[in-house]
Length: 277
Image 1 (cartoon, one colour):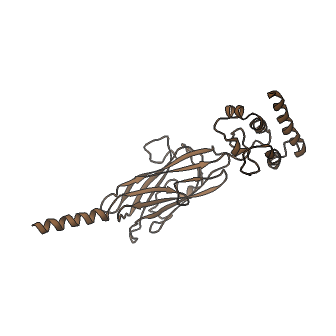
Image 2: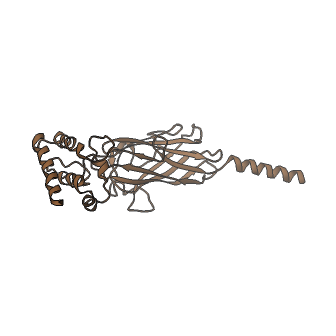
Image 3: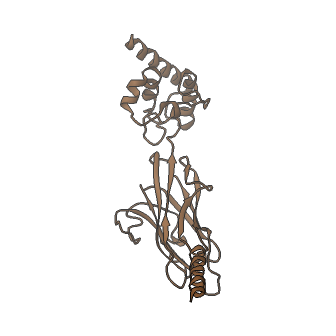
């Protein structure tokens, strides 16, 4: 009896060490955060890790987005899952992509919060396939469109069911931080360079000659980042005036020619400097 109890304890210990919990991580380039510029595409992997030897044959979860506006291009499940087989019940499906995520676009996705921005991912391993263990489970292609609201946003994996045929494996979801910087030259925070009407010119000048006034007028915008037009790493200064003019002229023909615009910018700087005296 004594030996039987010892054997049972050992078996339970082995079982406990062999089977643990899953953690579902959204990753870009293996990291839990990334900076992506407006107009750029990024690839997100949903990665499963385990503290044991967990396996599963079906996966159901959602990705919840803190704010709308990303373009969802494609989802690619990793073998043994099918990409576009009948077992892939993800919504929106690849046939409906690309699509821009907002509450209306994805409102039919199952969610605890009907007002949330979700991608629903559901798939089953084919009957002749081996169970999935750990690693990259599904890969998503997304694009940050021009005009997307700058700043940080959180993307959270919310597990529903990971089933191994014997029952569900407890799964914890983690979060990812996407940082979208302001566009270079977007001095007024309008999510783009206002070439046709030159609305970025006065804020540019203000940031040059009266930084406290600029910071009060445009809180949350770092002038030394969006105004460092020559990308020298020394913040916004007089050396950025001509690159700023070139940036404006390069984007539109509806503003004055370069020499005239440069004089306007310099003149505005001198005018503001005189007011401060």
